[in-house]
Length: 182
Image (cartoon, rainbow, N blue to C red):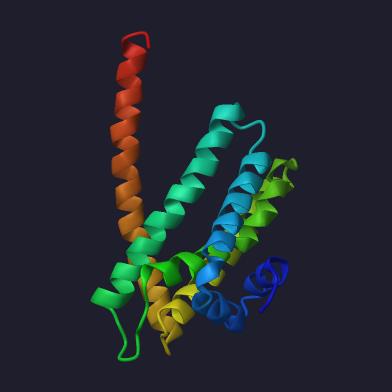
């Protein structure tokens, strides 16, 4: 069994065997959460100067909540709406593989670097997306990478709609609070 560091490196290499190992290891859920938290902290540190401490806390909170929501969405879409014949997955498996797909997000710690920060963030985002596709393919036991891409696209659309609804609701509540001097 690989160490946490070896698994992070394997996930960053987009190694399908790493994602298979994590999928099977029911004790790796805590490790997956650590990767998500570390990537969230890296994003928060990289965002220094773009919103202060409150913004950093929001980024970390969003990383953890987003991980759960994303795993649930990909599980539902991949096992109920778009399964392949051999698809056999549970929510724990999706949490583990998708948690490790956040590993390239560790690069976001460099986001504070003037001019290059946004480039690094873009590269990390694309890399995370690629890791997510591999994670979904392995976690859902797909033979088709195209189907994994489609699950990610459909999940992303649903996730964005949900995020806009939540931002509107909480943004509206926050705006009302400011209007009342809160």
